[in-house]
Image 1 (tube, chains in turn brown, blue):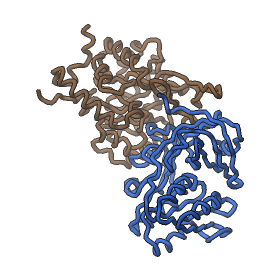
Image 2: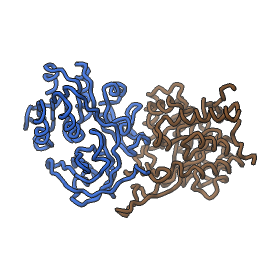
Image 3: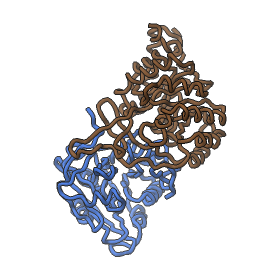
Amino acid sequence: MQEPDLSVEIAGFKMKNPLMLASGILGTSIASLKKVFEAGAGAVITKSIGYKARVGYDNPTLVEVHGGYLNAIGLSNPGVKEFYDELSNSKIGDLPLVVSLFGAKPSEFKEMVSILDELNIKAYELNLSCPHVKGFGIEVGQDPKAIREIVKSTKEETKKPLFVKLSPNVSDIVKIAKVAENSGADALTIMNTIRAMSIDIETFRPILANKIGGLSGPAIKPIAVRCVYEVSRSVRIPIIGCGGITSWQDAIEFFLAGARAVQIGTAIAYEGLGVFGKIKKGIRDYLIMKEKESVRDIVGLSHGF
Amino acid sequence: MVSNRPRITKVLDVIEESSTVRSLLFKDEMCSKAKPGQFMMVWIPGVDEIPMSISIMKDDQAGLTVRKVGEASTALFNMRVGSMIGIRGPYGNGFNPIIGKVMIVGAGTGLAPLMPLLEILTNKSASIDMIVGGKTMEEFIFVNKIKEILSKTESKIVVTTEDGSHGIKGLATDAILPILREKRFDMIYTCGPELMMKKVFEMAQEFNLPVQASLERVMKCGIGICGSCCIGKYNVCKDGPVFNSSKLKEVKDEFGLFKRDHSGKRVIF
């Protein structure tokens, strides 16, 4: 049997394989993103960039729990102008670079894209789903009107593909997904972390300085699979799965649920960057075993039952 | 097993190192068995969580050495016996102790991670040349302890102060050159202000000597995923904090030139 084809395309954005680095992990500089790419990622996403610089929350910003990690970094970022300055002084080259953006208003997204658009960025991911920063993220991501305005006005400013990253912290993710699709989103990233908390019993205190954070890791995987499955039944645009993927079996599950590509984040805490190569090889071997020519051939197969 | 979570422990002893520096001793099995140069994330409940070098390791106890500078370090400085702190770690790679002739260059609280290294090296090295720098005599820490440890092996200690109040007047790096001209070393270990370490590295390059330098950056997760402490393609928390000569060469566009603040913005040294 010939070598299976791992390449995928999302709204014209071609990737050599369907594994992406999830936003928020390691994406501070081009040098570190390149390292992830060299480790085997098909695309890499920066940490979320906002219009103005944010230092984020005090530490502790991260704590491990059974089945995953809680984090409340607080969207720390140097602001779009400093970020532009750093990117324009870095060699982006062939790096399949996706920039993640967050903001409170449509005008902020528009302005950020107009600053960044001349750079060799392949796509944007709009983070409309950070679970723990007031006024940004989820407060935007559960408001259909805000989503519509942000996606539409960002779309006017760029021809590059727009991915919209959604939150599971809503009563009906399918409804929100449809709003994003109808507003012009080219793909949906499903999903962001889940609001969660951990308390230290010795000191009686919530451990995270922000008290509440976002849960990532294996514990949230079945929720993400369900969200991908439900959303993929009702939208036509591609879905990028995200949430607790740590093995090739996890990745396959997302493809079967309807994801065309998947994002990996927390798994790096457990396994290091070698996890990309490991998952890639596992997907390849699985496709051979199942006699599939391409990873595209298994997307959504679970819907047949 | 969940390991990246603060282990709550009580401060067992507070040691006055200088008017602005104290060491805290506490029970922590894991950090008591760390490699020299590794660090821990120290949670000061209600205040912050900060990376601290492990400066003391004995039996089932570990210790840190803190200079009061900002809010978190001052809160740590003010801890008393019985105060509760949370410990994660040990993290990072640590120093690689070698057998041979070594030079150690430390300044200020940069001496903290060098202390456990020094103890190991006294049993291992052929000779130790130690250069200790500081601003002024009052701010000196560990000098008597260093002298005591060094007395057990073939060694030499040179002390420098910027104001000349103790030892040679000048910077630690000023004292290095004459020693390097006289004697051949197998390794130079250094920890202190980054500009000092950069100078040490440059001089070592000139003499073709290998270096291990312990770097410092803003840290949040401590486990190599958030990217706050990135330098070049490395994360100081995971790939460091100790960088050897070849890694230092790889990050030459950042080392001693800029670091990042809590937002990720580049700040010139």
